Length: 65
Image (cartoon, rainbow, N blue to C red; front, side):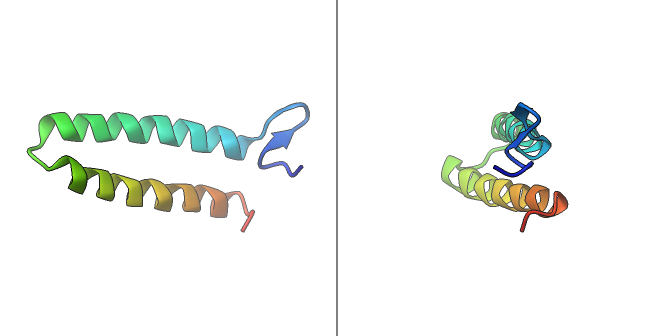
């Protein structure tokens, strides 16, 4: 198993970064949904695309693609 997922008996930094990013992204989505008048379907599509791009950047940043 590579260092992205598991390193020295614990989760790797790549997985940790994705988990933290995902939690913060969900909080951001909630704040936007509460403060802006936007349809939930449109917000979900925009946030999903941003989440995918963010995860791709994390994976690229760790050099695993």
